[in-house]
Length: 307
Length: 307
Image 1 (cartoon, chains in turn blue, orange):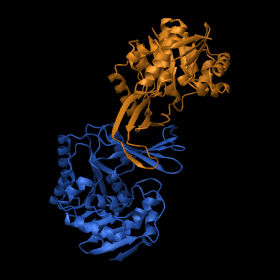
Image 2 (tube, chains in turn red, orange; image 1 turned 90 degrees about the horizontal axis):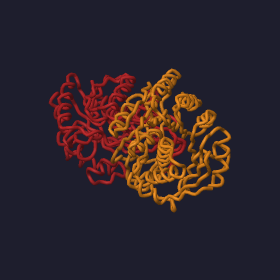
Image 3 (cartoon, one colour; image 1 turned 90 degrees about the vertical axis):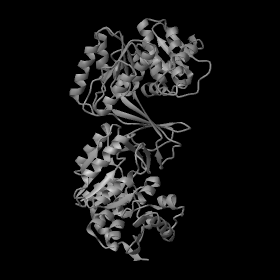
Image 4 (cartoon, helix red, strand yellow; image 1 turned 45 degrees about the vertical axis):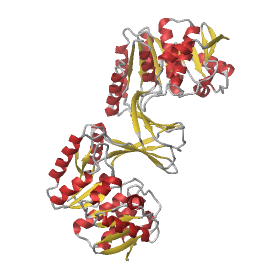
């Protein structure tokens, strides 16, 4: 069983407008809602592949209730802990050209609520073999949050994947997650290395491993993945980058890596799945969702090279 | 007592961002919520002037509950009827330069819900001397909605003000509201007259009166008001237009006109109040809210001319 954790889960709201014009007023022609947040997307992708998964995190107020209703409608198992503050919304305004995002900061979480969540998290670990910790922390949650959860997961014998950035990532690395999946911007912020290609990514990843990371898979957008692991170093990519909606591609990548970790898949196969699943998310018009047929088709096209 | 009706009440949400950049993702630094919709704004302005007022309309779902909580926090008396659909939100994204608006369409209201609202409205009319009907209709509410409510109000002996546009305004005119307050765009849409100044406004207003309007006060933004009434024709304006936030200025104008109608104020005084209260809304940074001190100061500056 895989457990995903989304401390700052969101109700993703998409507004369809004709054309975004700064400083004008727009009539929204259609409103779509979806449960969101990085760990929620990971859980949805794993569920669409038939993988047993449970989504947890913090989700309070009427927005949290709505988010959980939408997860239930998608038949994704969830055990979110309600808090007093209303869950955040992410509003995406889509017009004929592209999408513009507005991300609320999230509710203020009290120390007592965070403490209750760590106990709740520990109670869910029975039978869990892989824990995925993803995304930003809401205001009030300490930067050591992921470090605390990683320690609890390791004590329960679960393998861990951390997909975060900034201080929560830095603090988490000290507890040695089995796998981290930074993108180029996150690598740059943490190591100071400007990641302009696979070689720079590899240098940055070595620094990350010195900070405590176990295996590292760096995602370079259309440039594919660079993996630096105990077993070796690989690069995996499609022959040509795909056009589409890259939002949620990183979450699909993490879903594949979690599945590969659970199954003990050889690294080249994990990376093949991760590139193909990311690409299947890029091809899907709804962010954070994959087309399973595209995934199987794209798998055969991925190029994996040992470096 | 004044009763305001807002069939498509909204939760007004303001997102503060650094700078709006189309097709980028923005971290929202602050989220502010307020009960909104044109009739709600009218009620809030009347309440801030100490005028007894009751706000009604349709407001369903968790967003409707939140909207009513916020009205209660503002100590505005309300008797909204809950419906199954969630009330709409209006999202305004404010950056250092200006504001960009996104208006959800509103919930789908069933025929049974609309019928229940007309009965609810009729039950509120006891002791009401002025009814203000404002704003758009949510999907499912018939274009004859305002006509129906006007007829009920007239039967109960209340005077009526209609501030709407398009077909709901056209249908409402047939039932002869005591007063309508179109702006230049609404006049143009209804009469085909391009309203580029007070003379054109007067021509358009004459057409409107032929369609059934009683007294008409046309709002021309910084150009002030043109009133065509049984008692005469007036123009009222400030010596110079003000800079500020014009959102809600029309609702403040309607609030002054409702108060003047209730008190039987002479027309020049009503118009003086209406211009000053609109200007006090323009000066207030929060849309749909007035600064009462500014109102009293600006009253002395309004120029009212008989035409």
